[in-house]
Image (cartoon, rainbow, N blue to C red; front, side, top):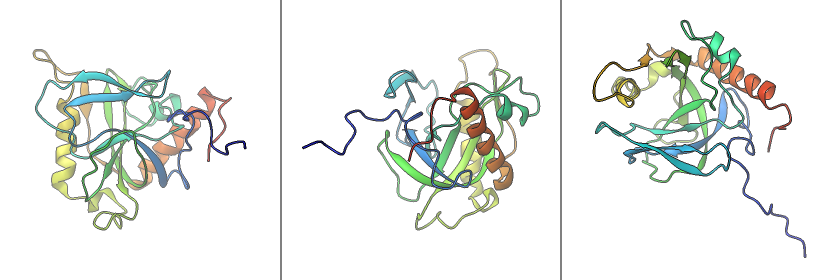
Length: 206
């Protein structure tokens, strides 16, 4: 009897859809949890997580950190960031608030976009979209970044401002003031547009 299941695990960047209702409700592939002192990121060739680097600082990621499938920070995303030379050529990063701490990476969840942080890394746009776990009992009803506890936003700004900080010299990273849901959804939609232009052979997965 032929199995109805795929023989191969889908690539989390190319084989999963951006979400049920992007740019507002999106899928998230989690790469890093609030318990990780090692920076993991998806290997673009295989789809498995690989170790990128051990963190130099003692700060932990304040929330879940991953990316939205079938997104790409290309020209459209780069044009939205003042001072950026373009997008960074990676899937669009996203941070997800959850009242219950999730300790496992390589999981997929559904989140509602509420805002974002404008970040430039090495001259390229590297937006960090902010979202809440959909149906979360504490954060699930939030709809705007202004409703997110200010302490959490400050921790995120500090984390991304310092997580690449060298032992000496200056950092190539700058993080601006948070932007709201409307602009964040434009960034997500632009990243989906950039992805479809960069990878026209990839159809939207279910």
